[in-house]
Amino acid sequence: NAGVTQTPKFQVLKTGQSMTLQCAQDMNHNSMYWYRQDPGMGLRLIYYSASEGTTDKGEVPNGYNVSRLNKREFSLRLESAAPSQTSVYFCASSEPAGLGRYEQYFGPGTRLTVT
Amino acid sequence: KNQVEQSPQSLIILEGKNCTLQCNYTVSPFSNLRWYKQDTGRGPVSLTIMTFSENTKSNGRYTATLDADTKQSSLHITASQLSDSASYICVVIAEYGNKLVFGAGTILRVKS
Image (cartoon, one colour):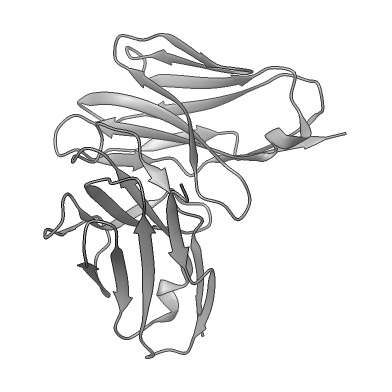
């Protein structure tokens, strides 16, 4: 099992460009999450999907959109990147639905720089 | 406001020594508390999960304690190894709204 995989690992964007971060899990989990991690701060939840076909905003959703493509895949899109979105992005999954009740498994992260 | 504060921000110890990391929280109502280890360039990996009724939980050389009355937790690492060098993150889960509140982490460096 690969667990949670993310692509790309690194990305540099210019302000205003768009891109999609990809996440996939092979643990048959219902719930998936996107976080961002900034220096000196704890991880912050951007969006989550409690189950296939549903998505909800987290703590810092502005400037992002998500798509739960199927049970395995959950993508994060930046429509018009801004320097404030420079961060490390982590995808996570858990089973069953519910943010806090069960173990979350994290991907390796995508390091994004917006210039 | 739900917050998780960790101390120290960073710590350097010699290989073989013990250390203790602290976590204070104001999250309420409390559901459970977790400690994660995050190696450089990797995602966090769970070390322990503690519910309200648990005071101590061990995972090998890692021992977490929880005092729900004072809202404090600690992670004690025994006989540190070079591979323990990482960031250690305290996460508190609120009962209602299923909210996870992450601390900023303590960066531990173990020197030979």
